[in-house]
Length: 297
Image (cartoon, rainbow, N blue to C red; front, side, top):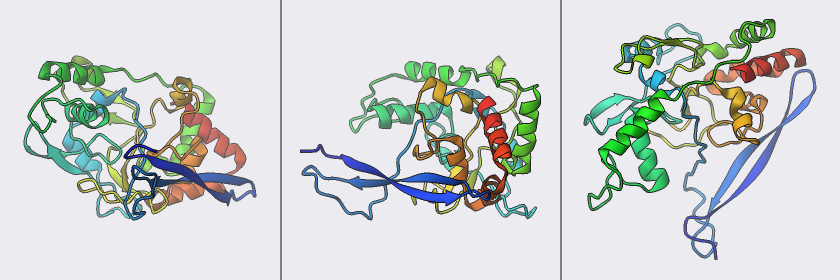
C-alpha cells in the first residue's frame, strides 16, 4: 500500500522541429496524486514539481539595492520591447512588513534568512525562530539560523570558463542577438553591505530577479504572492555549465523537465517567445555556439 502523499510521475513527450528540419523532443511532467490505498485523487488539485536551485552567490543577489531592481522593472512594458518584468511583493516575517521577493522560483522569499528558515521548516521539518511548530517549539535557535544564513550569503560563485576567448565572445553576441540578455542581465552591482566581500561589487549573475510571464507551456497555475501561475523569477545562469559536473544527469527548469540546455530554451514562451524562436530558427552552428557559451558561465 503506498503511503499517504504518494504520487505517480510520468512524462509526456512533445515533439517539434527546428527550422532546418532537425527534430527535437521535449517532455512535460504528468503528476497523479494518490491516497493511502493507491486511489487517484481529484486531478483538478494543482501540484508542481520543484528542483532545488544552486545556493552559491546568493549574498550578492541579496545585496543589490531595491531601487536598482525597481528601475529595471517595466511592468507596463513602457518601452514596448515585449519584456515586462516586475517585482514580487512578499511578507517579511522578521520585519513584519511587505518587502520585495528575491529568492525561490517565483521570488517568494525576501531574504536569505527567511529562505533558509522556510527550507528548514518545509523541506526538512526543522522548526526555527521564523517558523516554530504549532506549540511554539523550535528545533534550532537563532544562532544556528544566523550561521546558516551567513554561509549561504558568502558561498562564492564558480568562476566562468575562458571568458576572454573568441568562442565565448561569439556566444555572448548570440546571447544578446537572441534577446536572452533582456531578462538574464549580464551585470548587476551590489550596494553597501556589512559583509565586506559583498559590498559594492559588480558581478555577472545573468538574472534581473524579476517575475516574467513565460507562457502556458511552463505554467503551473500556482500563484505565489503577486506571481501568477505563468510567472517565474528569472533564474541566474552563472555556474550553469557545472550543473552536470556536480550532479551527473542533472536537469533544468523548475521541475526538471529539460534534459539539456537546448530543451530549457525551447520551453520558453510568453515574454521569452522571441528568444525561443530565434533559437529554433538559428543554424545548428549558432545553436551550438550559444549552448557552448551558456556552459562556460
